[in-house]
Length: 202
Length: 202
DNA sequence: CGAGTGATTGACTTAGATCAATGACCGTGG
DNA sequence: CCACGGTCATTGATCTAAGTCAATCACTCG
Image (cartoon, rainbow over all chains, first blue to last red; front, side, top):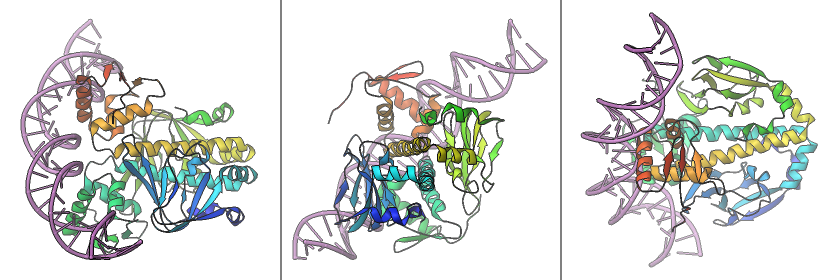
């Protein structure tokens, strides 16, 4: 969306680009941080490993998104990033970015703004997990991404990934989606979900 | 915890405190932003209205938390905040805070760092919610707050609140805690939980 | 063409949500 | 000072939604 707007062209030009093949790893959890990345093309899967070695989906970064912003302030990457498709990323080195912030307060402010919006987004996602019913989580998800008049929501990648995002097993999500379709609450077409009427019954 | 450390005492002293009665509104969605708030005492409910006018719970802010960080960067509040209990908040005016950042890049960096750490913390909490078993969530929670050698964790407030943080009903948490005690995995004393051995099986 | 993965559905089981009740412990106002 | 209302802590019984195991089909990729 407007995620990339915070970076002025001058800074962007100075960054190194790197091309990744599908499945290739950008960085691993625990590696020393180099800086933050911006996705130029393709999709990057961003996961965290928990103590048992299971992976937790953090996000799917699309062109324009940045990943590992927090890494500017911590010594090692907290997540692992791998390319889903062939992808091009741009690396902004930590030291130079921090220096840039010092030089240009407006840029610093834009960066803060981006972080603040991410916090808001994460809180909304966390709140979604407080709902115990699968259907409610799906509704909450749809409501959160149905901007203004958008009645159609595109799945970021696969349904399995959406299941991880919602904290459900993929089977449970398939069933919930099927039930909601059957009830006419949503309609599915290709990789999209649309919900016809603004239901406001109790 | 360290959420408030980024603010130097001088700035903090300049902030105005305000007392809210239970149920009183701090700000409404769509109102022009004044600045960001820090919760001094009590609890603040933070909700967003979706396109259909349903409310989406964003968070419950507790003492030490800040709310509406994003409001520093947008013209109107995106959320609505109301006091759940009697509460005291501290207001940091947008203009003065931003001016302070411009004047003092170190402060700006500290603020960014705080935001980045909040993001990390939120991600860990989100990760916890991806675990399906109540016991695993409790273990994860304990592991996350047992710094280095600390084998004793104090509950932040009530067990009910912990249940909400873990995304469980309070009954489920009571039972899980009871089971874990019975199995000798943890011991409970007053408002604290201690877990004897650093289990690293698997 | 076969391996690998996503999408989907079925059958079965269980962990946790729900509903409900009790005792302990406030603070408060008559 | 004590009865009363409120909330937390705890445990019991029941039920169901979602997890688990499993199988099939479609599709892509090398």
